[in-house]
Length: 343
Image (cartoon, rainbow, N blue to C red; front, side, top):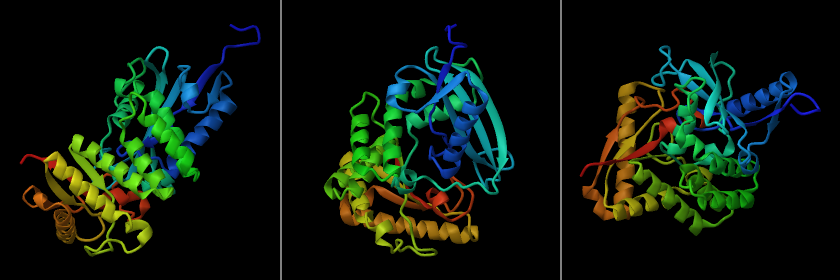
């Protein structure tokens, strides 16, 4: 023990995320801030430091947490009625979990608005890095090893987190440099990196670079057999949302999806999704019409896809968020999804 008093343990907080999509929101950020303040006020043996590559490289304790909407059976399907909150404290020196916690909270008053980067991110799919984070927190107990998908990528994850923070603060040039740095790391092949490169380049007016970066997003989705895109439509129609700030990039997205899918010589199922608002038969029909519209747009870009794509509508049966708020918080529930299928 040091002469100056009890030993202090360094803790960094890897930003809390939604336990299904990996998104960060006002709620997850607020909870992270409150936890940091609580540690500083109540637990003097711990010193909270910023989640950065420099600090992570010293192998500190890392606090992670998921904030997940669940239904009445505590499952992540159907209408979400509560939040399941999971925390895990991981020791990077030993590679094991040293503590776990679980709680539930009502949904009323929770601000689930995604942070800027996650609002703007054009696409989503399951990413091994995010799955590693989630699996380290969920379904584990103290003493278990840290999921290798997480621990092997945590250093690069810290660089990505700094890039996300820079983007949220409007420092797009800094964000671009950080995402480029992450891409060059051994574990930099992550969806958050490709989304980040697209977003930063788009904000900086670098349209050609943004298109190439979105193409990498598509390649990642093809590799993982699934890509959900946030094509937003006017309510009740198959017309894209008319605001150029929202739908302006869509022609580039469609061109890249068509080009990359055609080049990869894959077959696609184009699935439309809706939020739970409205009668389900109507949602089924509307989601199918939207999928057919996007399918036709793809075929106009790459005619060879005409024989390699099918359209499907699933209504609101496969929600990722499931709150039914019909705002930016559940935009992914109104997605168009591309799945690689057998030809």
